[in-house]
Image (cartoon, rainbow, N blue to C red; front, side, top):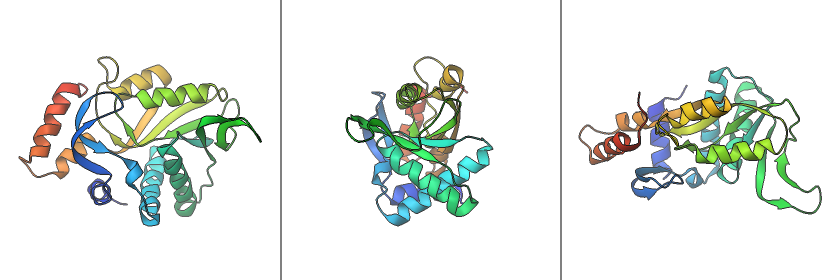
Length: 214
């Protein structure tokens, strides 16, 4: 089983985990950024899929299909499904959405597995910050069928507050009944850096401002 430290190194070497000054989808100014769009080779996507497959099987969750929100989630969900079959013998259906609804052929916005009422679905995403992207996914899934979304698998839990005082993860669980399973957390990233490193100080300051109470 690969370690969290190995995953952090893997992201850094691929240019997926970077440090600097960024603005997230939540509008927050952040000292580090995770861009899974920088996974760009066959080796990258194969290894990434293995990490997702590991966390999916370790969760013990049971579901009928995996969903990846466009655009980054498309690659993630395909990689995870491929690894689940390759390493665990699980032939898991997966689907994703188009940003633009197709008005010809079969039409619609869903590609891949066609979910039905009552299906248990897990979302495969890159990061959780304030939960904004997950809420967008829930709206899409709600308009697809009467689905039971039970889990969310992400590369990184940024360990931040959501729209209120609760953590983004607690908000999602309270609002939608979703359990979130990250491969690593912001604290894992901090622990991987040298003591006194400027990046540690900036991440600690960021969590002091936006981090969820523990």
